[in-house]
Length: 454
Image (cartoon, rainbow, N blue to C red; front, side, top):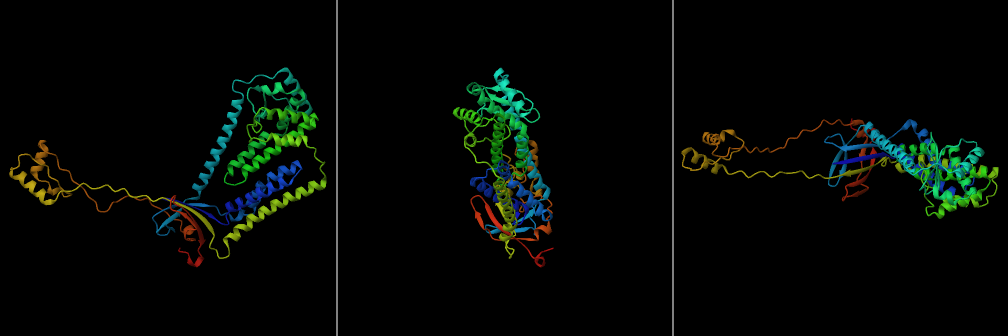
């Protein structure tokens, strides 16, 4: 038993992973240095996705996808040294690998959408009530100032983030009942303006689409960080939009501090995105930021473009350097094997032939008082008439033939080996191996044309 996953060194999968990791690391470094332009900060979180698309565009004509192999009994299969022998592998059809990827992505998307529905149902599950006259008055004033239609508003008993805007086609603003009672009019106005800003910017739709993209490219690292960073930037952008309408950043910061005082500062009552950090939002609201200049914005934009260029360049060159000019690292293969011990059923002991002859002679002469069933082998001619008569009369055990086969015969499926694919690879001795769990890492080398077996 076993399975072999082979990833060509210069395949699009390796290049995409290198580009995403490099873009995520450099993007986080840029954000720590201090990018201040909101649009550029959001673009920094999108750099991994931009690097992925650039790599796909550059390698479109030379797609080299990973493939999976299974052990077969075939001479032309790829021999891989396993322990003290060889195990031969043949590749699966490409649609099987694509179907596995599509199935995983579909399951992730279904789980995401079901989680969104459960969140909305939990918020509205039996405890939601209509807004009070005070809440409705303040919400109507904020909606008029932001020039957006007033969505339905519901009060619930438990919304740790204080407030949330959920839904896409039928948006809904949910408020925590106890927190609205503790907030004054200015604080409540700031919180409502923040949630209405999310609806104005269509952040829920954008978050859902980005989550689906993440589920499709689940194998690419850095996606989780990018989603969290984009959520943080959306929260900061909604705060800025609310402050432009209310002109009271201190009131919004005070409302967020009351959410923190409730004991759940990192819990956001949001359906589509992970939780944000309320403390960081308060710091951005109370700290006085120097005005942004066109020069600083240009420098930050150039830094983001540089990160994108470096990530794409690393994705194109690093796999080429790893493969080397010698061509002995054309692909890396991860092999899992499990030794299955054959099940051996012990055969029943067969009485020696001399005793069988003796008992048959006793039965034929009638000297034996109690008929005894003979023990026979595969030859039906060894069964005497007396034994058959005794069996028919019911006075003795009927003889049974003990069939013994020296060679077990088992049906085997017809296996077709992809000669073109198998003939071009040669496996090296294991680079890393573990006898305990049967895992091993091998380098695969492309065979020269003159050495390939057709």
